[in-house]
Length: 223
Image (tube, rainbow, N blue to C red; front, side, top):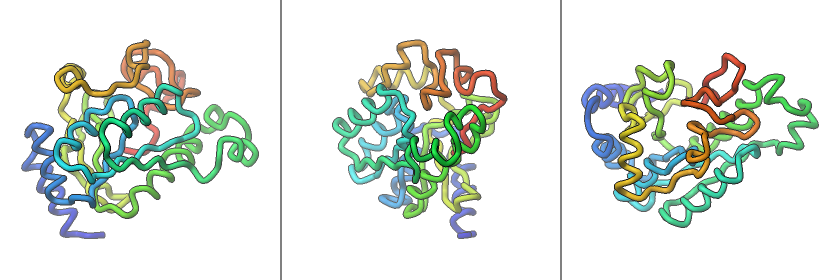
């Protein structure tokens, strides 16, 4: 573990708490440059749009789980065309068919944590390996488990700096930025989906209630 880097991240988290999202992201871009990567779920492209206004060489990573809605993949392709940042689509080691053959069909029903681990967490871990810091669009208002989300923190498991420029944003803040900058948005968000994940585990619903409906699970484990 890089003790000095962890200390710097925790210090930045204190110093930047309450700062505008652009200032938080600018700190990360200035501090890490192309050693920073943006993780994007392709629900909306707010963070991608924001970083594209600062530098053109910050990579964006998207986890193609094999279970995404067509609309999500279409949003990914549109983001690639519009923002011109290096886009990395990372896939699990097993295809969906391969996973079915080894672990049984519909693993997302029998063991959703194992499914997320193989199709989301491990691919992201591989994709993040070359970088010292990563940023995501997670917000405190999304779930109870994110209420204490720092704007800059330390990803203990991966040994990297983790940045959440939008941590303090509300839905209204996101919508205002989308409108002001004409940001690309997944069309599913206009079709009753407030949170978009893999199609077998996502239903129309308010907030994240449409994810893993009927289960106590609220997070895939990435964050």
